[in-house]
Length: 483
Image (cartoon, rainbow, N blue to C red; front, side, top):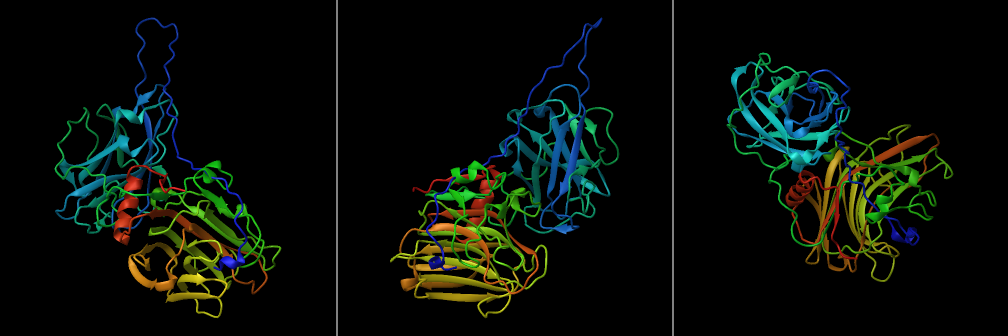
């Protein structure tokens, strides 16, 4: 992506959305009744889905919502959820709240051995709420509770024989094999072997204490390192959300290239829910065309602050090898990069994925490129060939005179010497057409799960750990990088 093809960036607006749930406590109105009025017994409805629909998975991911279907307010501190399963092997299980609208700090979980095991359950995960979770008014819901359960030895789990697991239920729906209790008495669902007639006695945990380590991959979650950092997982409502600008981003709508000039549009951006994404939310860049310049729209978003230099840049990106709609064959470019203006100290470092090739190159090419001058076409590059359909974590470190590029933890390229950045850069994503080889409507989508920058030099494994820490803490956005 050549900076010389781009005009000066326009003024940008900035902002971010942190999802919050308004839990309103209400009172029970009583009429003039003879005798003592009693509050109605609490009733709840649980919805469940899984993001690991297969029988074998790296972890169990039960997601829930709990709604108050009664007529009186219900404090969540009175509520407990139990998810029943058969433990695999002797390794202890660990629990993490990945994201909760009520706040992960208000959600705890521990694994308990069943006193009377069955063929499909010998343990359960109990999920409880702290007082900070608030009170559900009649008709109100907790909204998303995104939970994770995994073996401490990081071996796969077999969910096929788990009582509460519903294979293929990847959209919210009922699950009567998960129980919800209020003050210890089950009010929703059926436990293995049937529900007790009296409130159960809590059994002490038989496994390691709960941890807040998110179970994506070793190493365990660590707090963000000291030093300036940016993290954003794009919890925005749409392209017009004022929080985009408030958080230092600008969606490009100006003129210029690369690709089909003067076709940049805010309508190319959306921020949908996505069950395949960590935290369940993505930024979607949609480039579309009918084969004519007038019928083309390209997508680009940039940081408004040119303030990033040495350190670590990372993003989790979903690449597509084919259009979402229409005929395949476009020379489309799906990117994550850093760049400065095209001046005497120009710098640019690129990840550019070309699923159908371009500029005469082969299909399924990931170009990692360090630029010294776009005007003189002075750069060093590497072409990693192979399909990258799906999610991938891209990491670039800029440190000690060397730029190093990683894809999913594997180093694919490094550059040094005069190709080392010479001044501060912006962070950017775009999706654009190199050319328009045929007519007919088609759309291409590139998704971004999160982006992270640290002024420290981190390994890809350390990046994963730090990002997991942000999710565990319920952090959607932070920026401590000085302008």
